[in-house]
Image (cartoon, rainbow, N blue to C red; front, side, top):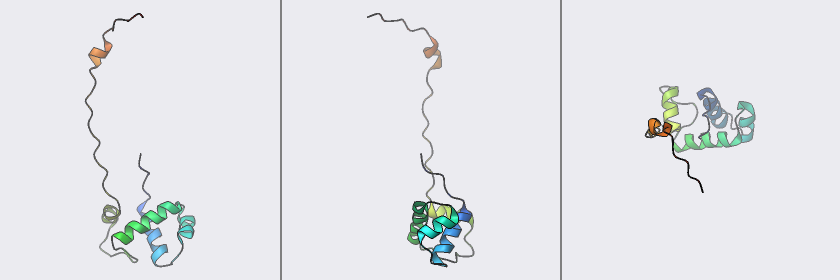
Length: 95
């Protein structure tokens, strides 16, 4: 199961602290309450997308999230079991 995403406020804080304050990932993690791995992943994704601080004025939270994170794949639909057949008594096999 994928990890829960951080709030966009925290993601913006990570980017601000990294690009404006030039803090280490360890200090950013302590300041935001995120793990160092989450900070590293967020910064890496932002750099790959060409983002820095300050963020463009026209970049809202939903567009920022779409840029940094891929959309979750839709869940595949499984066929429902035949409940009537399951309710029928199955003869016992004696060994």
